[in-house]
Length: 420
Image 1 (spheres, rainbow, N blue to C red):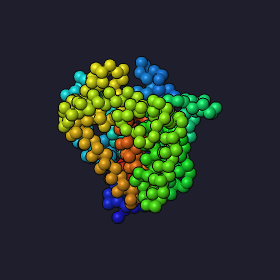
Image 2: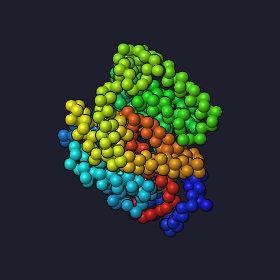
Image 3: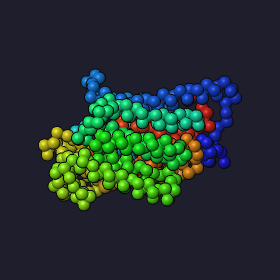
Image 4: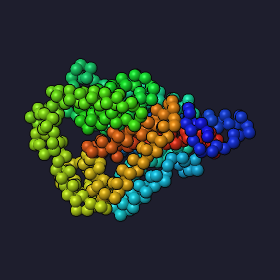
């Protein structure tokens, strides 16, 4: 048996080291620089839209460039180093194939190609990240970088809404996409805490909860609260139970604050028993009519759906000025039916459990990252119920799959090649 990153066992054989120690060091340095540069690029692209998202460059918003640039860079890396990709391509191949089939027959629908590229972007980024062979030092660096991102999040939050410093809080939800993005950090910080990272990561997780409360984004707040009790990391049962009780108590306190009551109910107040969908007092932000229309389409064609991006046609015909139904699961069911949607869910579940299998044999920073990447699928799946995280790849998906790619690359860290 061969011991991999910080204690990870694996049966994967390694190649003999180069005869020249100098060449081995050169290759190691190129790997180190390449992976650091690529990871930092994805992180920068995730944070840039926080401030500059509405600015345009060459006629396109920065928000768009923030996923296009990683996609292009990743695609080039994959083409050059295709033989070094260690990402589980076969696991995601059925999902990729069905997307391409639906895109081909629905390519004339509004923004069909753009939506396809956005959905495929995290996979391309993950493939590219998996060509690198990170050392323990680099894995520890990534943990430190992710840990420091919370301070950047708060700085950007205060820049966007400086009145928070004076105690003036917004009365409406704002920065939804950004709050969806930090769900990945929430899942990682909880995993870091459970895997021995210390109480500071628990405090950082609480800081993220506070950020979602300040932004008054209901979906991201619920998903963020789920990160702790639903973590895939080996949290002891009694601690998990205690944490669940604490989270539920905090959720009830938050729900009964005046600010959240005004955000939840048209009348400005309500109780837990009032949280049912057909309650006219519940603020749904225009979702009800959209969801009912799309659900009728699902009922008509439940198995194969109505065609790629056909939901946009249905929503625009209703007179809405948006094409986003704020429910990715419903959108997928409408477009690609139960067959395609189930395939996506199954791919995520298998990916999550494969990561857990790796994490159980790992220790240190490597284990922290693996459990963090696996746990991130929980808030991701939850936020799909109320928002459009599949298309917010620059905020969540790209960085998430970068971590997954790095994890698989670390399994082959001893494989030395002259190609890089």
